[in-house]
Each structure stands twice: as structure tokens, then as C-alpha cells.
Length: 163
Image 1 (cartoon, rainbow, N blue to C red):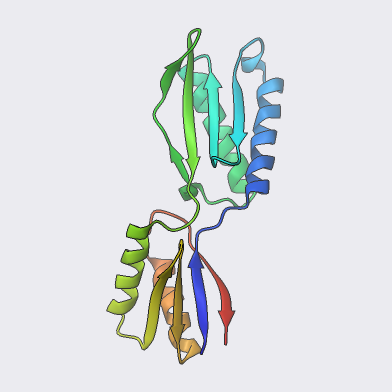
Image 2 (image 1 turned 90 degrees about the horizontal axis):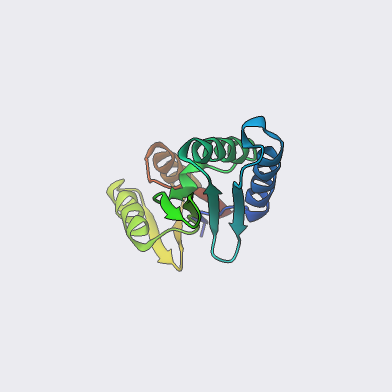
């Protein structure tokens, strides 16, 4: 029976490349000269830590990071910007969380939307993804088209299409 999976996967190597390019920008830009700004990727925690001297530098780093991520085909909806907070020695800090996988509430919303189409397909939540099965590939493609039109708050990929 034909099926496909709905997932939210982020290529962490591309995120690492974007962070490294942003780090090089910090070292070479004139307005960052003699400043203690830095950006660190924590792969295991799926977080990016940004440290800057003031809010202007923080916004410049965030903007450059967003540009570099977009160039590397990382959807910016996968980022969850935390609040800016004070750090040691007159510095400010911000944690940016990288959302990977589909949380249970979003998965339930996806299943409910699929059932609302009245197509002859079944959707099942499996771990941090949703598997959709049906008898006709056309029905599966209609589900994909419907989900691409919806705003889910995170980037969705449709993988493992089997017929």
C-alpha cells in the first residue's frame, strides 16, 4: 500500500556551516572590531548561543545568521528565538533553539486536517513523524498539496514515498 512520512528534519551540518560563516563575519566586520561578540552551536542540545555587547550587535548577528541559514536552504521557521537576557560583564545573551521533529500537538493537528479532507487515507503518529497510507497515490499527493498550503509553524518535509 502506498505511503509517505511527514517529518521536520534539519541538516545540522548546514546549520554548522551557517554558524561558522557568521562567526567569520563577526571577526571581519568593522563595527565588531574590539568587541566580545560570539556565536556558538551546541549540536547535542540543538541550540545556538549568541553573546553580544549590545542589542545593535545582537540584531546584526541574528540578521547575518538568518541570511546564512536561508542561503543554505534551512527554513527559518525551524528556529525558536528565546528572550534576550543579561549575561556577565555588561553582555547580553540569546538562545536560539532549533526545532526538529514534529511535536505531538502539531502531529494531532496534521492528522485532524488529513481526516477532514475525506480522502481514503489513514494517518498515524509514529515517534516524531506522521505516516500517511492510502490505496491511491493521487490521494496521497492531494494530502501533500493540502499540507503545503497550510501554515503549521514549522517546516515540513514529505519523505519515503512508497508505491
